[in-house]
Image (cartoon, rainbow, N blue to C red; front, side, top):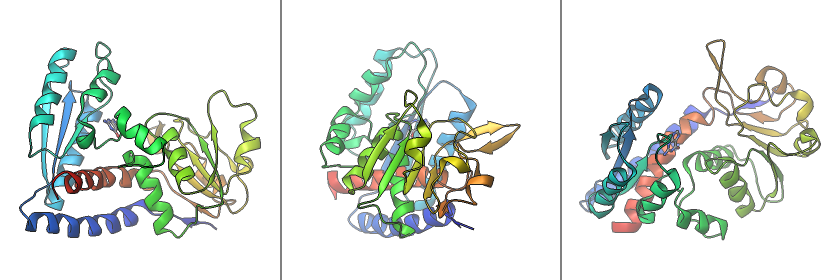
Length: 281
Ligand code: GUN
């Protein structure tokens, strides 16, 4: 049986470290502050935003949410972002996705001050990690790294196969593993014979959003399998990996729920503290 990599335990370890860093910042009069901008009243987004707020509070950070109506114009949203850019007490700005279709997401991302971009999605920050000198990594990618590092799974020299190339998870995760000297194969929806590649993986990261995409026949014996997918099937949350069959084959595997998910919000706090330290620490 493989090692099941428990994201809740690892996230708790990360938060213990963050508490010390927050304490150090507070001792010099700095309280790291994260502001989330939420457009519209999508219930899933609102619940996600509340969980961010609760975690910030629990860690002794400052948090705030700006609620904007779904009818907000692009100009109004960008002006809100610019006010946050100009506010010296704000360390991290997160504009919650998805945005309504009348708003150009790229333009909004580009309006966030790169020094306050906790998502790591601003073109400047993408350029930093693409050129091998990251300031921060996008939260999910950063969480995957914490899972590997804290589980003593080595990356350098290993073959890492990423299934998915999204700007939010797949592509930055490939860049992170490359930065840590893995040999990276980036697969995507146009990849022919996906199994040919996944069978080569020492580390297999799956971030597609398709339940059951990866089964036991797609996984090399002893591989580490990181499942980023979150899919609702018959009212149950499942990943992109068929956990039941793949756990017979893998050396280590993250469950869904309870694997990568718990790290994502924690790494958002980590990124806020990192940016606060860089800008005013
Ligand atoms: N919506 C769901 N996940 C995320 C995320 O990581 N960042 C932002 N900005 N919006 C999201």
